[in-house]
Amino acid sequence: MATRYYAHFVADTQESRDSGEYSGVVELDAPLRPQRELRDLRTLLARNFHLAAEDIRILNWATLH
Image 1 (tube, rainbow, N blue to C red):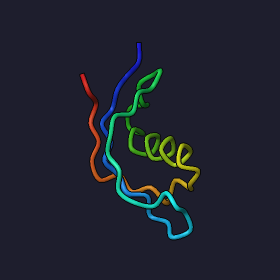
Image 2 (image 1 turned 90 degrees about the horizontal axis):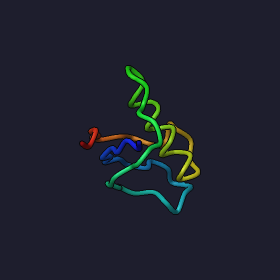
Image 3 (image 1 turned 120 degrees about the horizontal axis):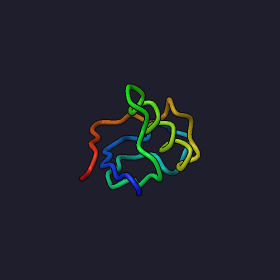
Image 4 (image 1 turned 30 degrees about the vertical axis):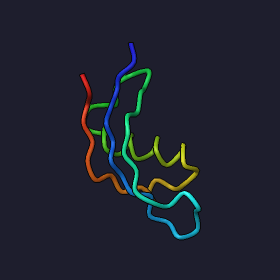
């Protein structure tokens, strides 16, 4: 069963045309790892935007039920 998360984040890079503020639902095949949720979510978002994880600043996130 997929796990859904709400994420509100900023892509902080001047080199990318994808820079900006985003929010939406992220659906994963497995839940994020406890105690590492923020880092794992940032890594996933960065990979999807073709950015470094350091370029993603998560403002808010929550598990959706």
